[in-house]
Image 1 (cartoon, rainbow, N blue to C red):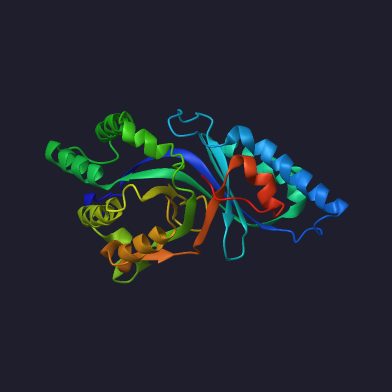
Image 2 (cartoon, helix red, strand yellow):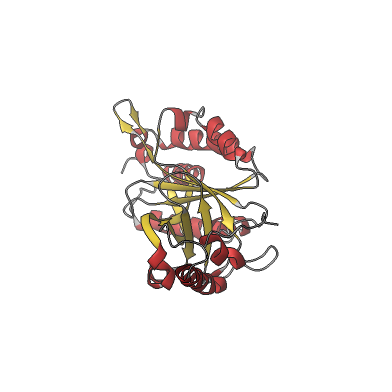
Length: 289
């Protein structure tokens, strides 16, 4: 494969599933059926409680985590978000929700499968330059050795591990999710750009994102071969207006304005683990602390 069109190296982390549901209109409040509805919602809360994300300062659980979000607008009302170390564990979490008594009141409204991904554009470009100078060709044993050594070094970095096994910040209860592709049109084909150009554009894009550090936490997950789009973006924020500001600003980056395609955006807020039953049952809740 020519150096110029070489794909970036990536590090893969936890598997990720976004489960979207609508709520069945349900029974009239105060009836016996309403009590049954609340009991089923409480059953979901009890099941999800051991899977709750860690509190601030606690270690990231190796088994992963799940959280529930109330989606506002669109065709879904509830998002159950799962992150797990293996595809099998993710499937178990998916089935556990679908087999829970609360599933009688949850109407499936779509899902999205991906794996947390860290694209190493600049690292790949530098490694290819090093290989070219050493006379090493891609897809050779010598190149494989260089790649494995580089990826091993990257995985040792604490911030890399934090990005591959992300947790939602406690002070950022709002969520924004959307899938995306890179265009493959004539004169707008991301995959025919030289690697150095792709690395440059992604670096510019990253500079925009870093201006929102402390306001937005971002998880990029890859879904090529897993779902209908190529990537998914999951954002967490303390203020939902920051989603609008960030996405607007990024639309002016060349990597987005020329090469970006986007699917449906879904926005909502986290339901505290001990309030899932009440929220699904439609009971009034105070704001999250």
